[in-house]
Length: 251
Image (cartoon, rainbow, N blue to C red; front, side, top):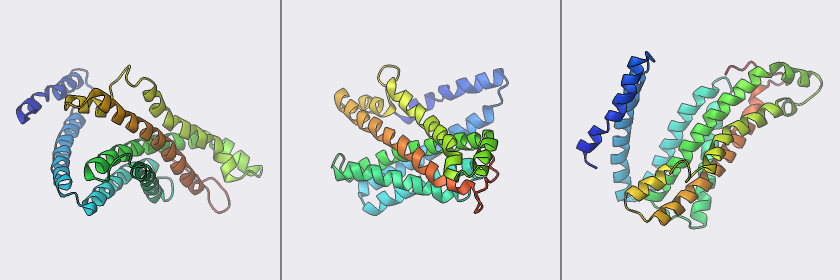
């Protein structure tokens, strides 16, 4: 694909702009900003990755992964700003998920330790973990607000913070995991995943592309479970003060 043919694909940006203008949705500015940002960010990342892949320097690999975790943490923390210490809790969750998944992949030699594999897979893991963290925090804070009276009743009857918040915590964990599980049920029938499609378009053998995609599918399932559980159990103690009283939470 050349830059000329790529510029023609801006037709796919023009269509939602026209629809937004026609239906008075008011999304024109956001659509343009999103388009411009994606172009700049992706082109910049493309040049950076080319440099990192060519150098194969271990330091650059760690710097790229660290940058991704930092950006994901800054974006996610906005959704849990009413939870004390949410920034380090999100960062700890993302780091743990990254270390866990890469340890398995590299430890069992499923992938080689090279920038091409580590950075690409880390990007998918961290990005998915970020989205799941946002889903969890949105649902968790909403559940707490909706069941505040029940929580305070359990506390007043002598229940522990863990007992008082248990149902809301479990509901939020399940809700954040469901999209990942449901999307995997129809994978290959309703949709061809992006990684698999990209490899096929690039000329890879379809069965080889399927094998790599299955790796990512299984990987993201672990990411969904570990992210939700880890962030949940790190977050809920911060909802209570030293007297075991529920603090005010805003979703």
